[in-house]
Image (cartoon, rainbow, N blue to C red):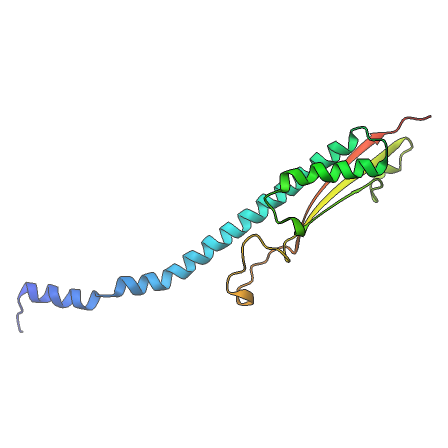
Length: 158
């Protein structure tokens, strides 16, 4: 059995370990980066969804304020609904205010009118976070985000 000096064995061991940290980092970093990217993407989507819902409810409240015409109510609703959405790209936003909501049982009752404000954001056309690696890595994300609020108003019989 050949005996070697302890300092020689330590130097040989360090030689074999040189660069292993860089290789481990190169293997692990993409995985952690993809996880971080997914967290940021979905966090912004959820934030935008919550903001759209808030904007729609604020627009519906504005629609209840007295206006002389229905068109003025609709314009006021969309104007108020766009106020909290200034951080989103404006060309991708769409606001609509309607007076009849289909599928709502209480809207068909006599003496009630339903007003709905729907705010949509085209996420596919204007994503908040740019796609990573193009079509090679597609996260399952919605094409559009929608916020909707319905207000029931008892009409006054004349």
